[in-house]
Image 1 (tube, rainbow, N blue to C red):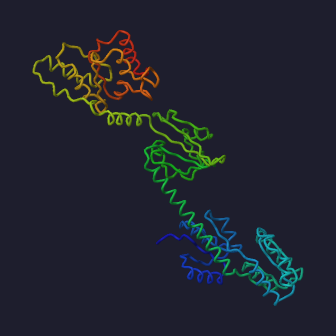
Image 2 (image 1 turned 120 degrees about the vertical axis):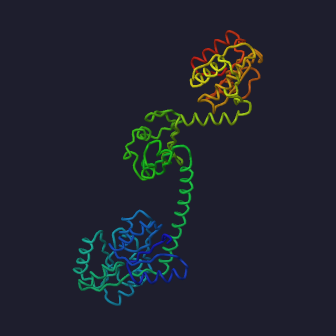
Image 3 (image 1 turned 90 degrees about the vertical axis):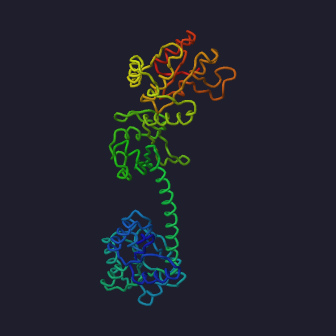
Length: 450
């Protein structure tokens, strides 16, 4: 069964029948139910739970519904013509006429002009705010000699008759009902577009690999991505609609105390490090809310390694493994086993030997056996590169570092080998100053571009 989008809760049987006729003529698919005051409110709450988009009602029943539900409520307005029709009927019953209405609608109609147009005595006006005041006003009308009361609520007409006065109902005209239905249709269309946008946005958030939490201007959570819920070890679906303070998570509270923007800051969350961005959402000078994004640093590093491998895969892979080293002598077997042990370490390894003994073959094999095997393997012959270019090739350079420097700078071979292995062949051919710089890189495990 499709959820109801428009619902009419009618306090009057006559209004229900009129609305049904109009809906048949205009081909509107609308639920129409009878409900007066408290009964109408109860039905409105039921339809809110069924995810209705808009409720249409009238008079005091409609006003009560507006106070009890969060979805839009369109009131069928009582027009001046509707009041004039009721006054015309009331004048046939008695001369002293009173109009009773909720105080919220006070001063809505010009009864002086209405009485002049109809050539009748201006009706006495009585306004009430609650049921107790309503009863007092009806008693007061009786004491002041009122013959007939006109009102838009059945209960008022009934109470007037119980006090010995006549009661004339103000019925809604066809035009008023049509106008309310059209306004409700517009609300449905607007809400439908908003829901489509929200679904579109939520789908994007749900499938992003970044943790996302958004709050409105009152710090009420509006969106939580599954990644954010996983990072916080909370169920994201249960957080939506909650004030950020009620969640009580120390990490979140530290960021939602103010709307100061943050960009690319690393913070600790439990045993993990997280890269955080915080962005206020504003339209003009109007603050609408805040978005916090989070990414685990370890995951970013792993992605970086994958991207580097994809970008520089050609020529930056180890071609041989230790099993490719063939030998039967105890010395070669012992050396292969030592290489396997060294591969389990993250330490810098120095391979020495005569030319042609397979030093590079061992370097390839150690890389493939290591925890960095999925990273790039960068091999460079230090003796083959010109000495004046070697430093910039190894360490990279920033834009404008020297004449002819590439715009935007260039990553060095150490950067390309990040999360992988770099093989410096013929390292002894490096100049002493460059060897000193290389030693610092090996010790600090950090590179500064030229």
